[in-house]
Length: 216
Image 1 (cartoon, helix red, strand yellow):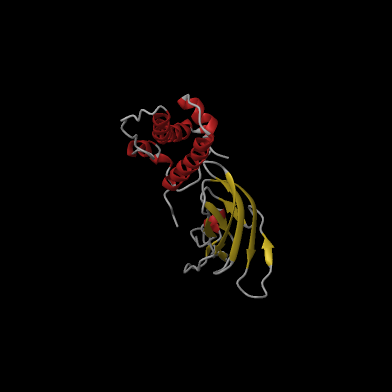
Image 2 (cartoon, helix red, strand yellow):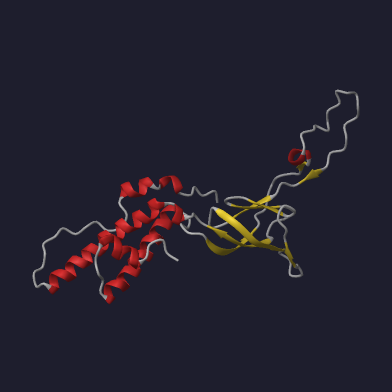
């Protein structure tokens, strides 16, 4: 699926395309969307992906369970009571996914690094929590392989600026090609200035707020 189609270009420019120009339009539109996604660091449409990530080792030490689940200092002896026994645990390991924002997570499996390790299916809220940039996995150790199937991406169809930017850039490039072909057919080559191709700097500045700031 693409944000802008050949039919959109024909309607936007009010032109007709030859079969060869239609093939070129497909290439131009796919390239422009890819260029936009490269600049933003994220897909502009929601798609399904599967990432395999190895859990990195951590130097942290266990922290009190109370740090996660309740606000009670068990070492408080102001009432004269002996401090209760602390229960310690490790914070979750964050698995950063290659595409964001994460919309849904379909499945998460984890396999240990040893040859005899089995593959376990993890359960949301019990074993992991979904974030916009990835998932927090509980109970993992270094070199565990976590496989995540998920959907992610911006809802570009609901951001009219994206479609308009691709239309404008595609129209500039198509106009170069269209004028050249028409000039040859008319046997009267036109001395027209070639339009700038690709996205202009001021156009990219307009969508900078959607750009992903990578954390890994």
